[in-house]
Amino acid sequence: KQEVTQIPAALSVPEGENLVLNCSFTDSAIYNLQWFRQDPGKGLTSLLLIQSSQREQTSGRLNASLDKSSGRSTLYIAASQPGDSATYLCAVLRTGNQFYFGTGTSLTVIP
Amino acid sequence: DGGITQSPKYLFRKEGQNVTLSCEQNLNHDAMYWYRQDPGQGLRLIYYSQIVNDFQKGDIAEGYSVSREKKESFPLTVTSAQKNPTAFYLCASTSRGSDTEAFFGQGTRLTVV
Image 1 (cartoon, rainbow over the protein chains, first blue to last red):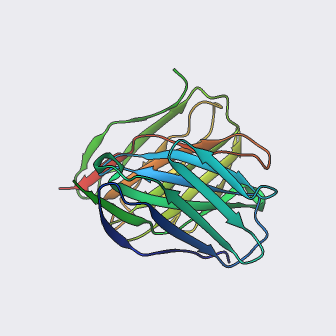
Image 2 (cartoon, rainbow over the protein chains, first blue to last red):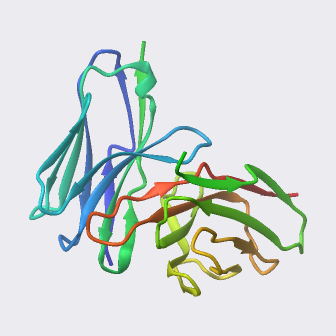
Image 3 (cartoon, rainbow over the protein chains, first blue to last red):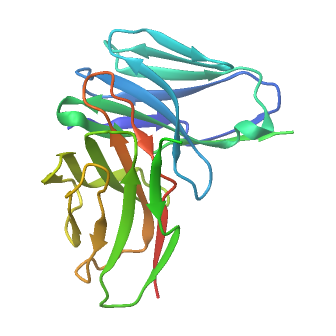
């Protein structure tokens, strides 16, 4: 069974710092990987989708990379802002349209 | 606006009651999912449906039931058999194919009183 791990579980950084969130998965046979943001008491908002044939995707200050062979993805956030404070989750899609989620990294950006 | 709508946002259930959570999407997506989220845990799959009139159990289906009579709708019933139903419930939908991107509703928080 696919297992998805996110490290660290929590992260606190000063405003303006660049940071990296990590996601690892045990089975490299994936269709794609998706990064989400979740604010307290809210649903998940899609940030970036990387297909299995791609190495990275960028959206504004966010850049996500994917290394299928090593079972890793990173989400890079440049010039962090207090509004970036949230929980970030990664999910991998496998056959049968089944998603497997990590437990998330809770990010706090201190003004 | 296209998206997924979950209702209600907050729901209270008495012991022994069945309650139904609504999930509607206007994205023309084939697949729909229900997840449960508990503090400190990842999302756990309850049920999913790839097509109308068909659905499959996820990892924690016991005490829950679903129906998929219309493409746009995938309601979840939390039955009295679910002994610990207090949680945050999330509905999602995706299109078919390997470039599938998942979209989520805003969630329903269910509390047993």
